[in-house]
Length: 130
Image 1 (cartoon, rainbow, N blue to C red):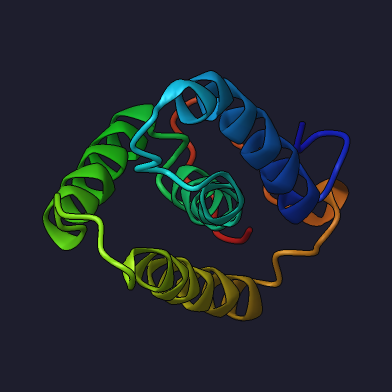
Image 2: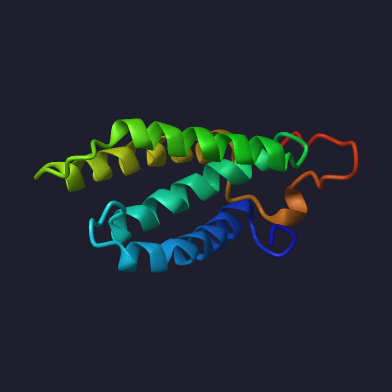
């Protein structure tokens, strides 16, 4: 996707696809552990961050898988099993924190740059800009 779109646009496309992948689980879960709207914004932020990691680690899918595992584990400890009245607020706070990280990455690395302005990843080459 980054050959056709900017890293930011490619990330957002992947984020919507990723959210759609989880949609059946969210709709069928009677406990509503993953509120669909908050989860959409979360996956968009994660997609931006994961794209940045991918582009800046020589296209390492292993590191992406590890970061995904860490964020899932972090969320499991952050969100209590008891769903109280503040549960949705906690989700929005979690989303906001990840969006702050995503915005910092975008500002720092010019996330809106077009693909032709990026360093293309060749075998054995580490990219230097996003």
